[in-house]
Amino acid sequence: MHTTFAGKRIVLGVTGSIAAFKVAGWVSNLTKEEARVAVIMTDSACRFVAPLTFAALSGERVHTSLFTQEGAEAIAHIQLAREADLVVIAPATAQTIARLAHGLADDLLSCTVLATRAKVLICPAMNAQMYSHPAVQENIEKLKGYGYQILTPESGRMACREEGVGRLPEWEQAREVMLQILAVPDLAGEKILITAGPTREPLDPARFLSNRSSGKMGYSLARTARRRGAEVTLISGPTALACPPDVCCVRVETAREMGEAVLAHCQQATVIVKAAAVADFRPVTMCAEKVKKEQADLQLPLEQTTDILKELGKLKKKTGFLLVGFAAESQNHTAEGEKKLKNKNLDLIAINDIGSANTGFEVDTNQVTLLDKEGISSLPLVSKEQTADLIWDHVVQMLEKRNKE
Ligand code: CTP
Image (cartoon, rainbow, N blue to C red; front, top):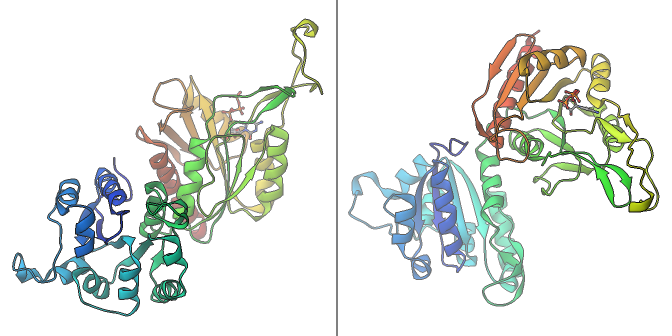
């Protein structure tokens, strides 16, 4: 799996909290994403989890001591500090946070943090009372002042059987913050409007017409654009997905509501990507009460919805945004894509093959063909997140070209 983590050197400091066992899973996930993980453990961390666990998961020797003769020529803390693309301390105990806030250099981890020029992410995990103590909070403020990022702990039930803020967040959340730190901010300054998911066109209070869109492609576009520095607004039809971090989410239900939300937000946008699978038809009437079996006449008169993308294509000249559409096709992909590119006045179209099992609706992978007035390029079959990054690579090139003109 080739992602932003591939080839990156992550120096991971593990300190003495029960949450250390959770971080073993993080190491496993990081190595799956091809990061090179060097683990430093404090003495108290070694009481919770054996260094051998981290060695097996990272495939590397675990560093536990400042004073070791093994590899002495390299000076471990300087070597690790230099190599690091990112230093992560997880879980970070109150003790380690205090040590770092006061610039102490009495173990391998604190020396490495002092010696590095890499970005530092601190992930506190402790009892809720400890976390809210003014001494800990003041120390955390100091760390922010040094330019370190803090992964705010979650609220919930903890190992000490108390409820409160202090739990180490799950991998998905930590991953997102790490990727935001590592990503190149090549979309900084862009205001990007993305639509995602299906729409629902109601027949009566219980029934609707919709389609198989899960929203995964649009949400991946929103998450990756935010990571790359853009200000992102996501207008989403009904999906089971959570709003990506730092993204402004607007939830809608019908094609009409989506159209209204898009028109309300499009003036500010510099780039618009319409990944939503908007319903093309809706029932002419919506019954206020549930239609009874015996009463149904088994005819369903439909009318066409407004093509939001086409409307945006008309507005484009005035407002100047870059307009990207999607095309869901099961046959004649290129010809259909070309037609939509021209008819809807788009700058770029991503043609989605919905005819195969690994692409299109519901699945986590996708294979997209990009088409603009310069030509056509086929992207590989990869995850929707990687597809999103490849689409942004193309958009970045188009924006650069536009800025030069
Ligand atoms: N789209 C839209 N409003 C609609 C229908 C579609 O904005 N009422 C947008 C989609 O968000 C997508 C693009 O148009 O970016 C293409 O959608 P697609 O369903 O592939 O094509 P249609 O134009 O609906 O044409 P057809 O279904 O006949 O292929």
